[in-house]
Length: 171
Image (cartoon, rainbow, N blue to C red):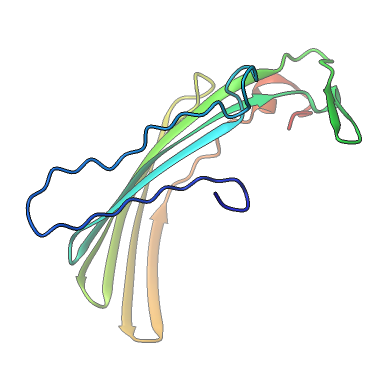
């Protein structure tokens, strides 16, 4: 557990012969405590990296976000207490955002790296799913000089405020 309450579990194993191995963790938590209600405002990130050849590194991962949105004018504070008062014409709601990515870095010779990758995002019926590619070429003709040629696409996910209200008063 780090200073921001992020839990990270790393596993590593080395054998000198073929071995059946299952490194896993089956812990489950009620993140808000017993009786805390629904699963809202939680984020999950899983990343896997593997050097499959001396010249090829693969990276992949998944991420997801379950968020609950409220009108910003519906929240007031008094000391440490936060009071949610639904107001206005737009209902609060939850939104599940999910994505996956894969990337390969190929180094045919010491001075050249070629990167190919893509990311897929889904927005729970708020927008069409998107696939965004990326390609990169890095050439190091001398030790202190790197020449980079990069191409990528990105996509700005729709915001809850853009799809629910005309005034943008969400956070």
